[in-house]
Length: 170
Image (cartoon, rainbow, N blue to C red; front, top):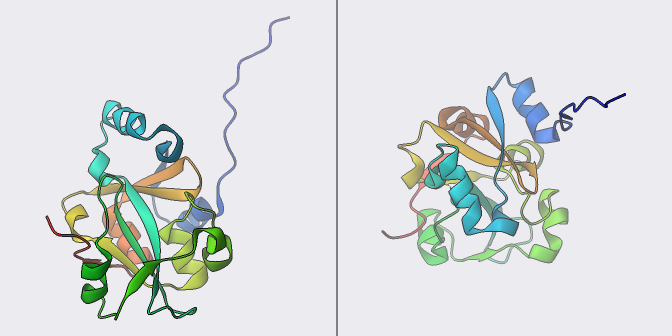
């Protein structure tokens, strides 16, 4: 007897459950940016997704204060200008949060950080690169490496009480 080939649906992540609780519509997406790099961008293009609408989540520590963290989301193709971002946020200085300690800081490992859970659980302020404003839909991590959610930009920004800033020149 032949076995039926059933597609196994992955369990929802906690961040997808948060979106469900807030009645926010989203689609699951997989962009293996950490392992596939450029080919992940090609996959996105093949799916009709502009790579500039796929965001990475950067956790920053302000003024070397162990209780002063901020989250910045920007397209995966871009780099963040820490000095400019610090000026935008009226902070003396910003540094990348300690990668080895991210799980303790945010509850997520490197590559799985998401503004959804960090905002809801940690209440860190969340900022978005102003260059994402033209995109109606954006993608962010779903709280698991390689797994993303694609949703309306306005829904995400409202959920996390986000603000737009300039994170780099150009």
